Structures are given as C-alpha cells and as structure tokens.
Length: 112
Image 1 (tube, helix red, strand yellow):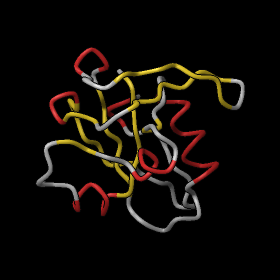
Image 2: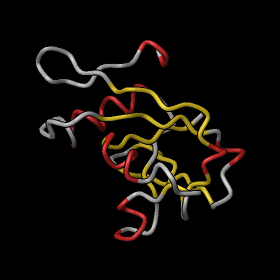
Image 3: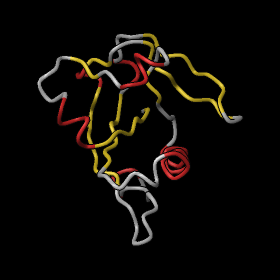
Image 4: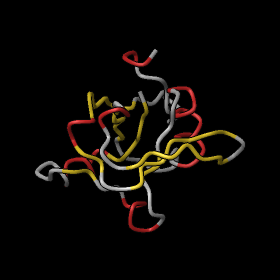
C-alpha cells in the first residue's frame, strides 16, 4: 500500500472525475506519495501543519495504478511518485487524517 495526503476540499472538487490529479502533477510532473504511514505523519507535520484545513489520506494499491510509479530519494528516504493521473480504482480507501489538540497530524486508527 502507498499513501497520498490531500486537503479534503481538493478531493471534493474532483468527486466526479475519472482520475485524481494532484496539483504537483502539473507543477512537478508526479503525485507525491509515501510508502509507510509513519513517514506520512512526518511529511504532514513538516509541510502541512500550518494549513488549518481538513486533510484526507488516499490508500492506494500500487499494483492497480495505471501510471508509472518510481521510488525516488528525497530527504534521505525513498518515496513513491506517481507519474500520471491516478485511476480511481487504485484507491482502496479514503481516510480522514486526524490531528491532536495542538494541531499535529496523528496516525488514524485504520493505519495503526
């Protein structure tokens, strides 16, 4: 399983589309993902903690992804990057990404 986090409003805006396209697909050429839930927490709190909006986690089955997935080094860790739109049938679950009272992202029970 690989994971992608996004603001809930972005997911709602693409509700009727056949594929999901993150903003970074246009700006960087790929959709950012992580391979471990714990790494997702690190990314979320490092880059998105200050955004006071609800976030979701897409749980993605990599064998179902039609676009190319490349595992690439960033911040001394390997991250899966999806090089194309994400076909929705590869998304096996959508989970709310909770925060604690201080605003830190915490691991949802479904991924613990």
